[in-house]
Amino acid sequence: MAKRSYKTELGCIACDELGELGAGKPNWLVETPHLLCAIDTHSLLIANRSTILLLSWSDNSAASPPLKIRPDLSPIDAESITALEWLAFGDNRVIVAGTSSGYLLFYSLRGDLIHRQMIYPGRVLKLRVRGTKKDLIQDTSSEEFCLIMPGVIARFDGSDVQNMLQKWFEEAQSRFWDEKPRSQDSEDFGNTDVKIPYQLWNIGKNGTCSDAAITGIMPPPLMEQQSSQRYYCAVAVGEDAVISAYRLSESKGRSLVGAILSKVVPATFSTLSSFSKLIWRSEPSPPKKSPKKLDQKPQPFARASSLTSLIDHPRKGEKLTLSPSGTLAAITDSLGRILLLDTQALVVVRLWKGYRDASCLFMEMLVSKNIASSSSSYSEPSKSDYCLCLAIHAPRKGIIEIWQMRTGPRLRTISCAKGSRMLQPSYRFGASMSTPYVPLEVFLLNGDSGQISILNRTLDS
Image 1 (cartoon, one colour):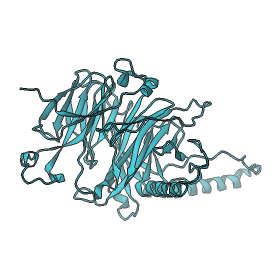
Image 2 (tube, one colour):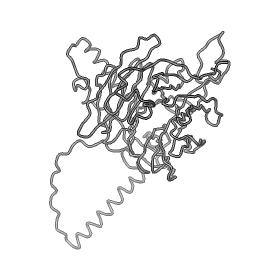
Image 3 (cartoon, rainbow, N blue to C red):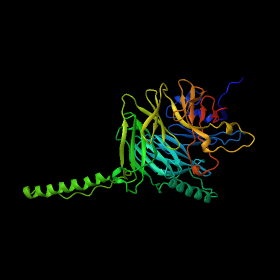
Image 4 (tube, rainbow, N blue to C red):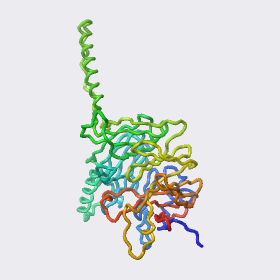
C-alpha cells in the first residue's frame, strides 16, 4: 500500500535567475538572510535586499518568463526591501513592497512603478491584506491593507487602495499605444503626487514590536459610548512584551478624560502665571523668531490606548498569524511555544510546546465526509462544510502538523524537506462577495528542488 503524501505537486519554479538570490546552496530558501517570499495563483515573488523576482508555473509548461524588478532605493540611507506581498482585486494583481526607509512601492506585473508613498520613517516589517464580511461576529464588512513597523501600524482602507489602482490601470490602458519608452521607476509613469489616505498609530507603548495585526472592530470606551468614531483592536508581539493589545481610534484628538484635563490644566497654569507677573513684574519675553522651513513631517498619530500586555522575561514574541475572522491569533515565541490567543477576550486558549523556529498558518479543511467523497451528485462545498485548522511547520522536526481549532485534535502529520517554507496567498479584495466559496489553503515551497505543492484539504486524501 502506497504511503499517503497529503500534498499535491503543482509545478516547479527552478530557473537560472534564482542563482542571484542564493539558489544552488542546500537550504538556501530558509538560510539566506533577508530573503522574502509571497505567493499567489500560479505566481511567486522572491526578493532579496535590492531585487524582486517574479516567477510563474503552469501545468502545461506555458509559464511566463521570470521578471526582475529593481526598485530605485536610496544608497545614502542604505535602503533595502524589507517586506513583500501581493495585492489583488478583480482580475488585476499588483506587487507591493515595503522598504527600510518607510516607503511603500506598488508595481505592475510588467515591472512598472504604479505608486510610491512615504508612510513613516522606519523599517517596514510586514504587509497585511485582510477582509471581513458582516456576520454574527462582525457588525460591518471591511477590507483593509496594513503596514507594520517597529512600534507603528498604518491602516489603508481597501476602497482607497482599489480606487488608486483602478485609476492607474485605466490610464495605463489609454496609454497602450504610446511607444515612448519608460523606465520601471519613471516619475511620469508612477503616481507619486497623489497620496493614499491612511491612519497611523503608535503601538510601542509596551516596547517595540516585531509583528502586529489589526484584529477587527471593537466597542468604544465606556465614557465614549455615544462617539461616532470607529475603534479597532490591535495585537502586537515583541521583545519587551510577549503580547500587547491596543484600542485604536480614528480620532487624532484626546479621549474625553484627556480633553477635560487639557482644558483645566492650561487654565490653572495661566491663572498662576498672571498672578506671579503682578507680584514680580517679570520682563516681557522677546518676540519669537519665525521658524525655518522644515521638511515634510510624518503624519501625526491617531489615538491608541493600551488594553493589556503579557511580560514574561526572557520570553519574546516573534511572529503572529491571524485567522480569517480575526478572532484567533497564533503567536510563536523565543522559547519554542505557540500560543493561541482569543483576540476578543484577549485570553490564551491553547498552548503548544517544543516548536522552536516554527511558523504557523491558518487553513480550512473539509470535515464532511459526504461532501469529500461524493461523486454522483457533485456540488461546491460551502463555508459551513469546512473547519478552521492551524498548520504548524516545525523545521527542526521536518514535519507539518495540522490541528483543528480551537481545541480539536491533531488531524495529520506531513513530512517535508528541510529547506522548505510554508506560504499562503493574501486576501483578494472583493473575495467576501465571491461564489463559490474559496477556502483558505496552504502551499509548500521546496527551495532545493523548486517544487511547489499544496496541502490537501480533505481528510481522506
